[in-house]
Length: 240
Image (cartoon, rainbow, N blue to C red; front, side):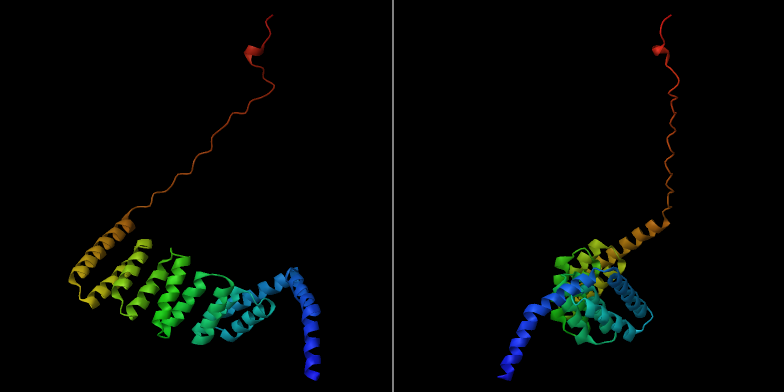
């Protein structure tokens, strides 16, 4: 009987009081005081992470989430903090929550990096592919995917991912990664092709560095002659 009464009281609380509490919380979040407090907490979190003070940063981020439990950015930052502290389970959980709140490719990519670090290469590859599907113009995503595919022994897929990265950003380091994969495959033809591309890219980069930078001339302002309204044109003069 007592249990039933407790359940009834709890139900009444949920029906009448919780909506009021939620409404009050929403109104509080719109206040200037709340905005200033959240800004200060973000500053503390960011400064603490830069100064390598993880406990202080964690406390600030958890306080943010206490006031705003749907703050995807805070979960993402907290995940990065846990990853740096090698708390991989906590890090993945934070990234997954962040991704569920805001379909952000960075959160998925970060989770993939944790899977890569812990040896869960299949999960890592899936995560990177999902991140690429959302944001396919970031070379780092393809390079990370290549690393996961390499660990899985899928060298051709890894090379394909590196080609995508190179198309976005023509770095020699990406070509060198391809060369290493061709060497693992003992593909002499592929090795020769990449070596030629490295030499070509090296020459092109050197040419760009040697090219003089032309100074752009600032356009000169056009001088305009102001007309005096008091002057009467000859055509307007009356004949005497």
